[in-house]
Image (cartoon, rainbow, N blue to C red; front, side, top):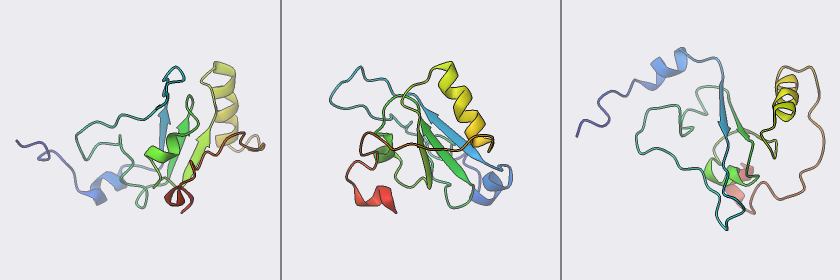
Length: 117
């Protein structure tokens, strides 16, 4: 009851954001399924519902297949681990001080059509 009563208008939310960077550290210990668990509430910056209103970057630091849980995100980055040195390199790349390069060793698109749109 009243779960959505505190939700702000999309325009109001977007007017307060320049960029949103979501960072997911999914650690499933190599279980068959490593998935992002989104909270049940809406209107929070958790599940990226605002990707057409605010520039959005999604970074996965643990599991390389998280794009399946956020296929709407236009910019997805896999770092493959969350070590301090890796995250420092990520920041340098996001700031334009270093180029993104390399080839993914896995299908980060998870074989899904909607992750490529």
